[in-house]
Length: 318
Image (cartoon, rainbow, N blue to C red; front, side, top):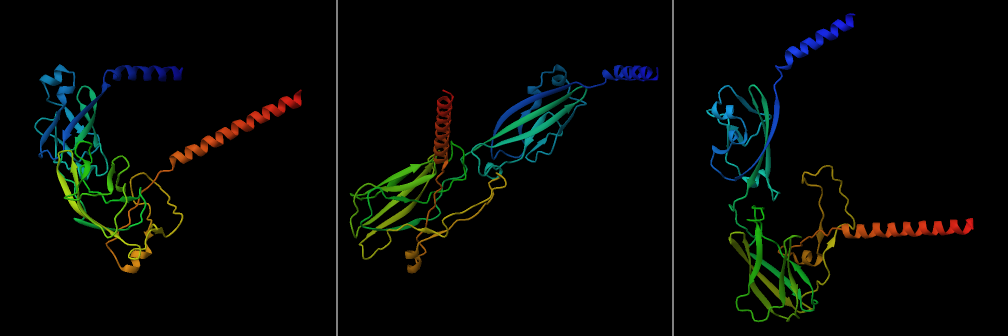
């Protein structure tokens, strides 16, 4: 009997307090704002997204707070439903990302509780122009370099990473050069800029030209490139640079784009000449395709062995 009385009391307590339990609603809001907006810019008025006539007509007595601190935004003290922003530098906030999103959750409380999941897209503006690290680059080649040789060039840097405002293209200004044996190739997807030799070189020839880069709004920068073609006895460096080791192994403990290791290659010819102007450029070539090919080979070998096993079993059973 005691247990029955306790259960009855518990049910009565629940019934008495059930009307006091506040209803809960979750609202998702996604907005876009431009970077570098002035401090205090209103980014959203929450009343525009809440379907409640009572809230629209009477905002007194409501509690509105961020679930956790959202450092780039704050709630207007005079009108709690208005969210304002500080001045945002997108390149500092998302230095490596083409898309920049911030998630700020708020709750509104009175008779009911509303959770506002606010997703903010920080739009890039073209506040940086592309820029080369140097204004002059010098390269020297042997006259017998074969057609198809690729010279990797140092690219310009642009802090604006969005598709709209980042680097769009490179092109050459050849001045008055009538015979130019190279073709410029820019592969944006693989972050590759190179000159490809498409014609025979002429010995003791010098090519002086401009490399120009532009971005989404045609802001540009330029550098001067000089290529000298030397005779065999003047130039003895047809071999590529050599890495210090044949194998480098790095352990990655997270995916936060932190430094994981260092590789180094050298060219003894330039070291002996004490020529510090000769740079070595590195390019990472993914091995995913080769890995997939290896897995396919293993799969087909497995099928072949399975068929042989079935064939042998049938022969023995017959």
